[in-house]
Length: 269
Image (cartoon, rainbow, N blue to C red; front, side, top):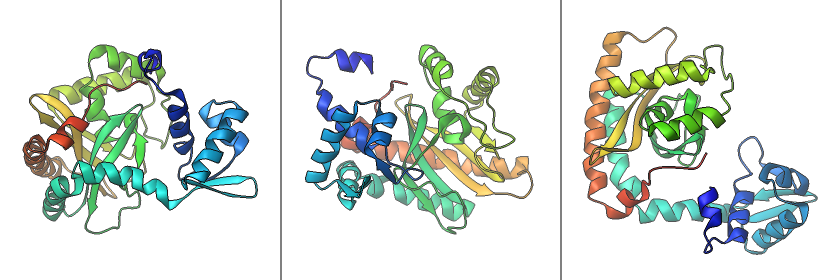
């Protein structure tokens, strides 16, 4: 983000306000001023001014000393979904894919060290780990994330591996950067990623890239829970359906400029 901050047109106050909003999540639904300051790296005074401004605008509420997000925050993300026609363009293909596989499917992009989910559909709603629209999951431990990481230029991948915190989420999570690099090389060669029990025990996910004009702009997956390891035959069947859906989605994306242009390559880690 250094290049952005060095830009004379960059509005630091706006960036700080957005970082305050992003400090809240599932694990931290309510935060004190000092907790927000710690999470954002801002001074207590700056944090206080940001929170007061966001409260006045209707994005943040307060109860005692604890702050929390208000429903108006949803309008920010909804503006993108509406403008880019995400549900209109992508959801029909996810529904068709799920009808074929009988599982859950998501489309995601790389944002920093995470996968940001832009669309999701699940017919059964039995999946314990439902990645809803806007949810973030660690890229290194997910099939979506690994497909996207494998498509990065070498210098960007090196930067990711040098800075990312590879925490052990289950007994099978790959946390060694060298091992992860080898896995990503294999994914780049084979054109798909399969992850089992690394994000959550029993969760198996297969993902493929969504490419427009030869560039990977997103990744598409199919996920489900298995008691035992999925067979090679079952994986092959899922891959066939995934690749067809990814191809269809790529063509659909290319016909919607607002959506296509939103898939920007390269992020700061």
